[in-house]
Every structure is written in C-alpha cells, then in structure tokens.
Image (cartoon, rainbow, N blue to C red; front, side, top):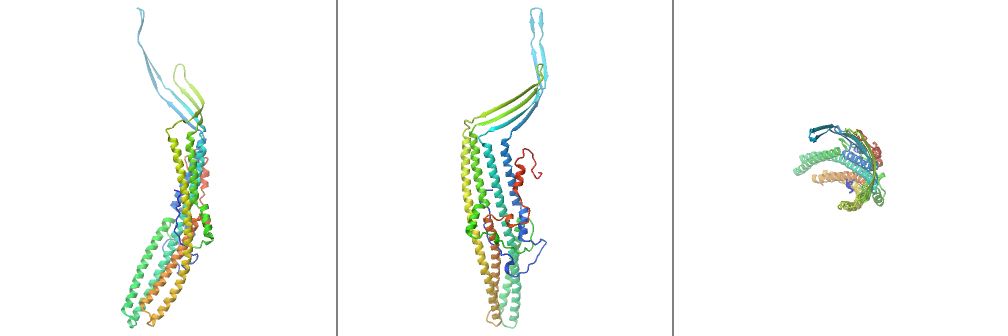
Length: 477
C-alpha cells in the first residue's frame, strides 16, 4: 500500500435519534435482522475481508524482523558423501637377464570412499548491515500498522456510509409510498368533484398523471434501496432489514476547524505511515553502503573421511578460520544501488508531503460538509413547515374554487421535495461526521467504543520476533 491517503472524502450525516424527523413508523421486513449502526461497525471490524487482508499483510511484514535478526546468528551446514571407486593397475612384463622373465601383471582395487562434515559460519562485522536492516524492518512494521489503522478507518467509514444509505433509502421509500396514498385520495376527490361539475376533465387527468408518476418514483426508490442493501452486504458481510436510527457522534468530534487540522497533521495514520516509509528508505541507503565496507567473519569446520586404503583407514580434520574480505571493485553495482536508494528516499519524503496535504484537504472538506448539512437540516425543517401550511391553505381554497387541482398537486410536490431534502441532509450530516472523525485519525474501534474483540498486532509480532526455527505460523498453519 502506498503512503498516499486512501481514506474517503465523501461527507454527510444523520442527526441522532431524529429518525429522519418525519414521524415515519419503523417496520422490519425480510429475513435479515434489524441492527444498529454500532452493530454494523462491530460486524465489519471483525469480518470485513479487506480489513482482514490488511491484517495478514501486517503479519507478513512482521517476519522481516526475524529475517533481519538472523544476520546476527551463525549459519550451520552439514554435508555427507558416499561412492564407489574402482581402479586397475597393469604392470608390463620384464626380464632379468637371459634366464628370468617377469610376466605382465594386472591389479584391480575396489573401494567405497565416504565421509561427512559440518561447517559453521559466523559474521563478526558486515559494515553495520545487520543493524540497519533490523531498524529498517522495524520501521516497515510500524508503517504497516499505521496502514492497517488507515484501512480500519476506511472500512468503518464505508460501513457507516452504507448503513446510512440504507436508512435514507428506507425513509425515502416510505415518503414515496405515503405520497402515492395522498395522490390516490386527491384523484378520488377530483373525480367526485368532476361528477358534480366542480372541476373539468383536465383536473382529473392531472391527478391521474401525478399518481402514475408517483408509482414510478416508488419503483425507483425500491431499486435504490436494493442497491444500497447490496452495497451494505458487500462491506459488512450480512443482509440488513430496516435499520434503526443512528446516534450522534458529535461528542467525539473536534471543537473547531483549527483543532481538527492540527490533530489530523499530528496523528493521522496515513501521514504516520508515510514518515515510517521515509525512515525505512533512509536506512536502506545505509544497508547498501555497507557493501562497500570490509567484512569480517569466522568459519569453523569439522570433517571425517573413510577411504579404504592399505595405509589409512580414517581421516579426521577440524579448522577454525578467520576471514577478512575487502571489496575493491564490483563493476559499479554497489554505487548504483546506493544512488537508487537515495532517490527512493527522496520520493518517500515527497509522498509524505502529499499525504499531509491530502489529509488537510480532507479535514477542511469534511468540516465544511458538517456545517453545510447542519444548515440544510434547519432550512429543510422550516421548508417542511411552510410547505405543509401552504398545502393546507391551497386545499381549502380549492374547495371553494379559488385554486385548481394542479395547484394542489404542486403544493403536495413541494412538501414531498422538502421531506426528501431533509432526509438527505440528515444522512449527509451523519456521514460527514464520520468523514471528519476519519480525517483526524479518530475513526477506530477504540474511539467509537465498539463491543468487539480488538485486534492487537503486537501479539503476532511478539510471537515471531525471536523465533530461531519453525515452519508453522502462530495460528497453526
């Protein structure tokens, strides 16, 4: 994962306990169980595959530390060999004077040479390569933990947004269905008035058209609800019925914009992960530079051989050798690696600056969205009251012939639009609150007080840090 900020900057939120402020009765449908936003967040924290994949990535990064520590330990190898050897020696004939002649002789020898040996190699000095590799690995582990925290924030934000989308769409669907009932009554009244000659056929046609349009709006609202529920299931891992109203998290938010900006710059995990990446890149420069330094090591060896021979049956040898290696020229590869590492370190520093700027922009944006949604809620509530009053007045005026059916339908539509606006604004404010909490680095299970077992990355790190051997992971794989 790169150090660029990956958290979402979409905003909007729903006021606590408001239940969208529309007096809509809550009903539960389907086989999925109703739940609170806190239940959804806890479920996603434990079961979201994206978050669990990031946890596995952190555990894999933990293994860099024991790999770096292995450089302090000796390496021991054993070897053994066995074979069959056959040799044949031919001696030509020779004569000793005129009387004695030695005939040609052929001698065949079979043997089975065999042996075994053990060699131990210990590095004494490697230009501080091991120390820098260890520090770099530890920086990578810290950076991976911050990336995990950032992923946790992203998942929790996505969950809150998906939950609020479902809650919003249920409320809008209720409003649309209620509008169908109202328009059906308007059509009935228009037809009765048409029969007694109070209105024209045009008025009934307008009422019929409005009713049919409301049926279309209901279908669209149902489709949007199904889409939001599918998104919720993708993130949380289970279906959802009618969600309960969400509680406000205003008590967790910063008290001012400047405080929010300062907090985000000091503690947001995307920024901290970027700076750990800078540290690791700087240490990698030293790792490559160590290749230019002398290397000192010690090698101990033991060997025993069994060679079938007439004079020697067994040979045992042991040695202890100190070794000094001084690099003189490696074709320029070491120097190139150092230069490359310096450029990478410069890149990481620039990425850290980008992360800081992105976090600041997201914080300011989320703060503005919270303020805008709050103002929109107040305006929408006032608009609903005014629209309801206007609708009542238009209906009374229509009864005495001062208003047409179209005037009543337009007033009804204004009231419907105001209610939908309020629902959207309340959803936007709650989502914006979670976006602001994420922007300052506070959108965590601990901060939200979720009732779920916390994932502690230190547990796995402590389990593997000092392991000298073993192929199984701590969980038994």
